[in-house]
Amino acid sequence: MTAPPTPDAPWPVRTVARKVAEWIGRLGEVWVEGQVAQISRRGAATVFLTLRDPAADLSVPVTCARDVADRPGLELAEGARVVVRARPDYYVARGSFSLRATEIRAVGLGELLARIERIRRLLAAEGLFDAARKKPLPFAPAVVGVVTGRDSAAERDVLVTARRRWPAVRFAVHHSLVQGASAAASVIDGLRRLDADPEVEVIVVARGGGSVEDLLPFSDEGLVRAIAACRTPVVTAVGHETDTTLVDHAADVRAATPTDAAHRVVPEIGEQQRLVDGLRARARHLLAARLEQQERWLDGVRSRPVLADPQRLLHGRADDVEQLRSRARRTLVHRVEGAERDLEHARARVAALSPAATLQRGYAVVQRADGALVRDPAEVADAERLSVRVAGGRMAVRVDREDGAS
Image (cartoon, rainbow, N blue to C red; front, side):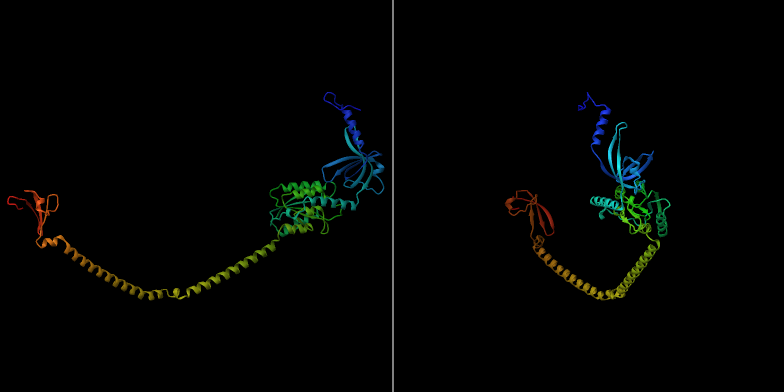
């Protein structure tokens, strides 16, 4: 037994290749399902095939004897779905992997439908068909992307019908293969190109009718995932009304035919014109009714007495104003007269109590130089100057105590 390799004792390439070949050889025979992508009959004994996985960008070379490939009843051609019984083989000299087939069986219609059903359940479980993921279609898109076959009836149906319904619509058309082994990849390329175009508002994938085998690319798992991943709304119109492919489940809208797709993506100009005319007529009717209602309301307001003869209110209020003025005048005169009488009484009382009245009766007021009143002769000194106030005015006097009097 060969010792495990180490940095100091590595294996040579031949040893690694031989061990890989031995490991692959122990795998034994396996059954493999795939699509024939390429076939070549070289010489008289060997046939070379390329077996492709439709759901992945992966392929494996297959070799078989001519009698295996040309078995009666087996129509082996590019694009055919087959099941191969083969033994994995590793060719040491070239370091290449291949399958050596001992039996090849064509996948019948039942097997194809069963495989499509398995893919449908898988994608449905992932939520790719959920209604919540569906995007609404834009109204009257300016640019419609179309993925279809070159010079196909489906292309003419979409373009002619859409332009007849909405002449202003423009198209971004991507011609792709719609049948065969490379059709799914070609349609995916067209989808991605149109989805990346900011002017494209909706994408139509269209193909005419055909057999189940012809429509098989439109049940390709990779194409279904590409449609589900599109940011732009996608309308599928593949086959006839009774045909259903997996892309119809992933699309935002499934049209029965390419003509039906054109009906769904653009409105009909005549119908829209009639709708606009109807809305205008309805708006005009509503506006006229509203104006008529407001005119009646205005006529009713104008016919009221207060607006018909505005002076009428003033006539009735003039007498009230005059009465109020007379009442106010009488009240004011009464109060003024009462205030005058009160004032006269107050003046009489003030006059009676005033010192001037006392002076009028002959009395006098004696004050010292500082203004203090003299109430007792003993309060003044001899020769002190005093001020004497009488009714007629003031006069200055001087105290003389020689005879004991002032």
